[in-house]
Image (cartoon, rainbow over all chains, first blue to last red; front, side, top):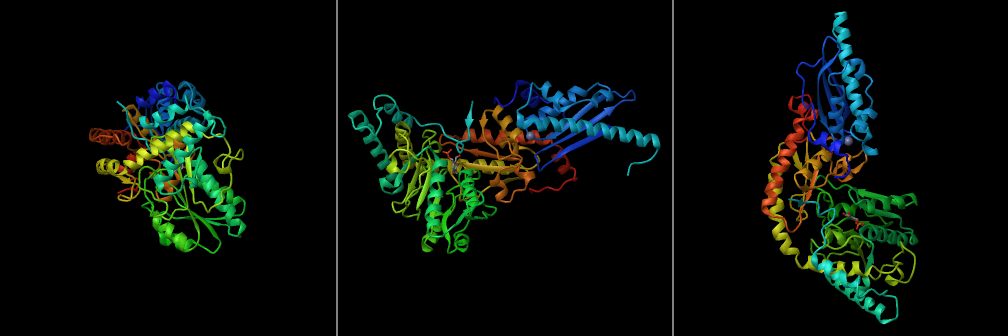
Length: 134
Length: 396
Ligand SMILES: Cc1ncc(COP(=O)(O)O)c(C=O)c1O
Ligand SMILES: [Zn+2]
């Protein structure tokens, strides 16, 4: 189908980093079934603040799966500070573009990564302060 | 290998239809309105095509109007009935919630003009009852328009009974038979139909040609103003190649309805039985009153577009009512109308079989869909939540 670039189809057909991280220290889930796309990101950040491993699960269309796959590739092995800068534009560009009505999928990927990073930072903070999160 | 299982979207033209149109692109290229021999030959062909189409529905040739397709025929039927109605102060129209947009958007336009539109519920099986139609008819009702068979879920409506109810109450009855024509026996008189729309590309005819049947007693309103073609009810030089192919395709389809159904129904039911085995899935539409080639399922925990793309990789051409395939935020209005919630409607799949489908292909489709659904579920956070009890299954 010519709807998507070869890059999108490649990441859709052979998604990188699919699955669950049992020892994740940052998890983010965004989207809802009303709109039709849900993404969940699992991060394993090491003591040097490097994203050692990342996995994703996605319920969604071809571009949602490809966007999650690409987003995980873009942050894997990178410092948290760098991952925090990830934008949906960067995800879409790395996929050689997305159709206009599919840009929301890349937005969702950015939001899922940011949610997972936030979860990581909250957990770290909670651990430091010795309190459990409400 | 390609299995084209999207015949409800469009069909491949039959060789009969192609052969029927070719002479009218070459030797017999005249304009039927021209007085000379070349034009009159085209005019003779047009007359003959009209007779042949009329014969397929048991009506008179003068009751057949050639249009640019199903959408135009739907528009003209509804607008005509509305104009007749408003002259008598009748501005109420009854339809259903799961009509094609050619009908729904025309009704929405009339609503803006002050018409009152009642959209009947179609229940979980996708069938409206004649009793419900009767109960909805008011003294100011000018039209009942209900599709013969639904394009997504294939459910067939009790058209003769609905038509009877309409006639008892003196209300015009139109049916969008785009999915039914050439697949189900239709006799407009026996089935109490006043107006009917069809589209040739749904029964192996060409795209961009359709038919509006309207009883001769019904004065039609033009959608396209112009010359005196089609008894002045549709301007524009007639699409003679398309019309000739429409007549040929329709005749061929109608002659083979029983044969095609005898081949398709067992294979359709085998496909349904195979997909029924996928856990947490549901068949959409009625099991019995169903188009011979239609299969439509929802699978919980996955999204339809990714399902289609992966099936395409396996050589299967299908369609889905998911939001992502339509480019809108909402899944199919048809699936919502039969009570599927958003979560489930996103995971829909329509396989509409062609008459040449084989049992091997059905087996292949069952295996492919089963595999792809399992694969997509394996990467779906929704499915994990369902499996691990954090979310309740909607489909048993
Ligand atoms: C039920 C129904 N009505 C109307 C139409 C519109 O027909 P056409 O594409 O010929 O305008 C279609 C085809 O998509 C249909 O399935
Ligand atoms: Zn999407």
